[in-house]
Length: 155
Image (cartoon, rainbow, N blue to C red):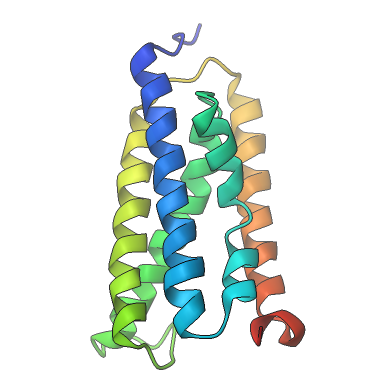
C-alpha cells in the first residue's frame, strides 16, 4: 500500500510547477530571444507544460512528469558546461553571456525540482508512474528533435 500524498506533497507539486515555469521562461525568453530561436525553445519546452498544469492543480502526478524533464534539461546543461570548460564536446556551439547565465538558471531549477519530486509521495500505481515517466521522456526527446528541424530551428 502506498502512502497518500500530504499537503506538503501538494505544496511540492506547486514548487515543481514553478520550477518548470522558470525553465520555460529561461529557455524561451532568455535563450530564445538572444539566439533568435524563440519558436525552437518554445517547442523544446512543451513537455514542461505538463508539469506546470498538474503542479498548479496540486496533483502529485506532476512528480512523474517533472522527473524525466528535469533530468533531461539538467543533463543538457551539464553537457554545455563540460563544453564551456573544455572538458568534453558532447554539445558544441557559441554561447553568449546571457545563454551561459541561463544554463545556470535552467540547471539549478531542474536540479531543485528533481530533488523536490523525489521527496514527494504518490498514491498512483507504480506502473502508471512508469508509463507517465516514459511517455513524458519520449515526448521530451521528440520535442527536442522536432525543434532542430530547419523550419523551426531558425525561427
